[in-house]
Length: 220
Ligand code: TIU
Image 1 (cartoon, protein in one colour):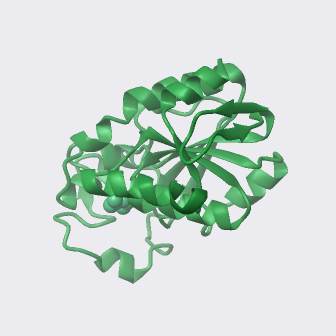
Image 2 (cartoon, protein in one colour):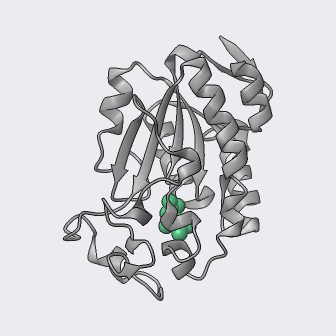
């Protein structure tokens, strides 16, 4: 077992039953011209996550930890996208529209895939998800069960949307979750701050929070 400093208390995990989860580090959220920007957001705020997350990913790979990437997106015919999601907000470009990187958030398109800096390598798991949470309508629960994973180190974007939804879902399913603070990002600085506080409040109500340096030191 490994113990690292975390909020609200030290976090203990066994690397052999732990997975590093990278949520939706996709071009459509992180590159100018994608879905995130079409919603009126400044993607520069999310891009701060890339370097620390690349460090954690390298450490996890060196330590032999299970690595799971997720991608939010939809089938080309949009049959897995609820009309409510298609209509939501007033983006300049909607899901399925032609964007600078192909059809926005459509599986198989360039913009839907993971940024080059964090591209999956052979043996890593990629979960395609139609929703914000990584468990809804995906094989994630079965994958974790098959690999006897009990602990998730959670990273990715955005903190208050897909990261929160996934951590809440995982917590309800009995997983111990550590969110790596500098490896999750939000388009809204206040959501980043409050989003992280919400996770560890009330004695880790649905998870723990630590910095990448603590995680990397523990995996060394
Ligand atoms: N991955 C994820 O968080 N999807 C979003 O749409 N997030 C926003 O914050 N818009």
